[in-house]
Length: 308
Image (cartoon, helix red, strand yellow):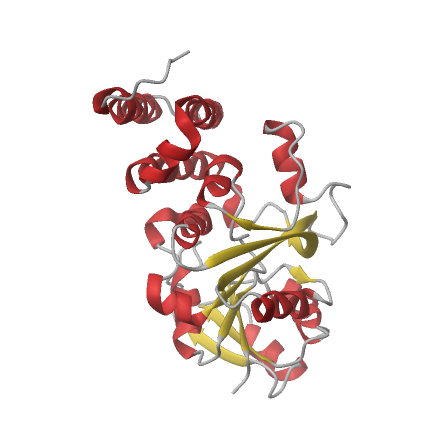
C-alpha cells in the first residue's frame, strides 16, 4: 500500500494535465499513488491518461459533471478510493517542485502530531510563466500586514484568523487519521473551504505546519474556480464571523482591537468586491449582520476593553 495518495480532481483541463502529472512523477519521494477523478469532462481525458500514463494513474470518472465548477464531488470520490496514510490534494493545472513530498514526509516523521502540511506557492500564468517575484503568501501579507515575517511554523488558530495562513488550496498534504477524526472540506464554504478547514485543524489536537519555502506552482488564469471574487469575499467574511462564535479563544487571545482591525479589513474587501460585481442589497444586509454580531460578541458579554 503506498504511503501517499495524490488526488487530482479534473474537469476539461487535458492541456495542463501532462505538465501537472510530470511534476508528480518527478518527485524525489516515490512511495505514492495518483488518483485522478474526472468530473464528467467533455474532452478525452481518459484517452490521454491511458496513452501517456498506462498503469501509472488510477483514473476514475463521473459520467456527469457533478461539481458544476466545484471540486468537492471529485475530491470525495478520490478520498473514498484511497487507502493511504496521507492525502495530497493537487489542482489539475498546478505543479509540485521536486522535493515537495519529501519535505512534507520529513515534517510528518519529525512531528508525530502533525495533521497537515502546507507550503507557500509561486503564482504562474496560463503558459507557466512566473507572475511575480514574490511568493503567494508574501504578497498577500505585504498588502495587509507590513513587517510581518513569513517563516516555517506550526500555525495557530490566531494565525489562521489574522493572516489567512493554513491549508493552501493546492499541494497541501493531510494525515488520513486526522480526516477520519475531524472530517474534511465542507461544500458550503466553496472556494474558501480550505480556510475554514485550517481553523478546524488548528483548533484540534493535530498540528498544522506551514512551510515558507514555495514548493507549489499555482496557475492563475481566467478559468480558475477561485476567480469569483465576490463569492470568495462573502465566504471569508462568513467563515471568520462563525469562527468568532465557534472558537472563544480568539476573543481571549486576540482582543477586540485586533479582531476589529481584521474584520473591518474583510468588510472593506467585501464591499469593494460587491461594488465591482454591481451587487448592493445583499452585501449591505450581510455587513449589517456582521457588525451586529461583533457588537453582541463583545459588548453583550461584559467585555471591558476600551473600544476605539
